[in-house]
Image (cartoon, rainbow, N blue to C red; front, side, top):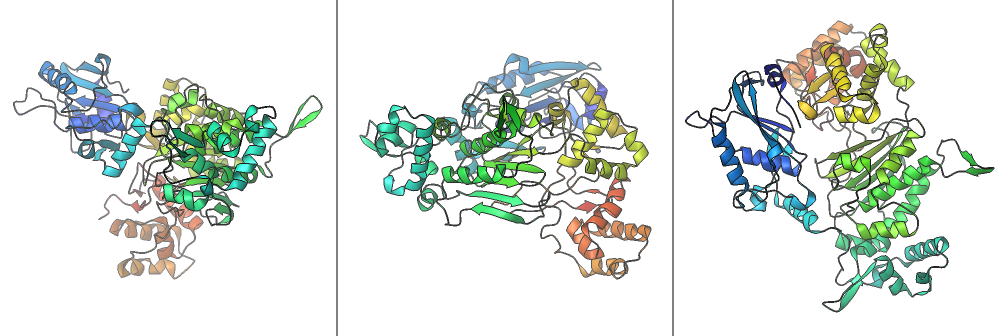
Length: 613
């Protein structure tokens, strides 16, 4: 929750994904709750929560100034009355402590903190219609959700587990029995004396949750969990049209690098979740460069890193929304492992990090893995992953959610120290050796993280550093004032990034499942003859002076917003030359800026000047 107490705090406010400011004067100037405040209430509740400030006016520079609300009681009465009216809002998630009056310079502001709604409260909608009154927050806008997204939230609300449904028309013939037999042997090896080892196939499937019985209808059949775990590909695709599993190994630490090994749904194997796990975990842990350790005189090859990778892979599979539009994607690179599953987290980020609370989307699938010693169901999965990575003194994992182009959760496990040598070299070149080395260790750590992860925020750095939150805020302020960092947003929504923020994203894919590279991509089209003509004096020679190239770049970006790939094509220069020799200095000197400054990895990111058309 954002706190403001003075005029300087108001001046620092910016509308962002978790901050909304409104004048709330009303026609008579005495004060009234703005009608569009309800859209923001719905949007904050359905996303990550946020703060609404009433009594602030936006000026021409997108800053806010104090106006105040004259009749605060009138506005508060309207707020609480409508919150209890189910014809207006589907639920009231506010308590008295969420609404406060703040007096600054003799004027009153109303501060409404909207918490994130629980899964069972979503969607929180307006005007008694979830299909037309459900909003989510994107950047600083409240966006009405389409029917498909609303129905997905409704399904999450009523279904504690998405995989327990008994599928009509599916039976044992839809199972890949080779997969099932391998699983059953693993179960027997782990629990050789268990009575389930003595029962037949269908009874065993029932005991582990892969087969279900509807006692009211006197019917039985495969559960969704059983089909996902052991099914044949065609049968799974019939039940889940968007079902997609993808493993890619890349030989270079870049999204531009082509994969050298890939496992996907090509018809050469069963295509079910269990076989995918077995094949992918072998690939992830093959040639894993971590020191072995001894217990007594026995070498233990099952290190904390092996355990973390197993946990991450199982988590990805059991928490996936298999009806979602994103694919399950696992990436192995020399510098990192990446895991992506369709669907957002069911437990808030902070609670998931602390462990102890589990709300698995596919509980039966989770049970099946647990029966053979894989995965946890007590909310301890993420802490185990973080602990395994910490044991190697690598960078803390990156856990994030994305809603564009579709809901997805991403986990990145970087095999890098906190201060990788190659990143230090890049930053010394960018800022100047003396300037960078004059920073203290915590300040350098913030810049190194921003270079590696493209953007950072307060929460992410608190995962990495062991300092007081106020001390971290001071570091961000100092680096921003000195021009080392740029920032957008306000409060907990503030993000920080270097002028030379890299535009490639480790795990982003289009809805069709193909990897996109925002740094290059297919972005060289849309170039006019005028642009080629202006650039010709540079593209026709390799000996142009640096100041001449910079002048042409500025002229080009004044006419049109241009991506890195487009500038490479116009100037006839390589990526490294264009980015490091020209764009980085121009961004550092604030002669160029991003078209989308708050989203450095935006798929349509481009460079512009202040006077761009």
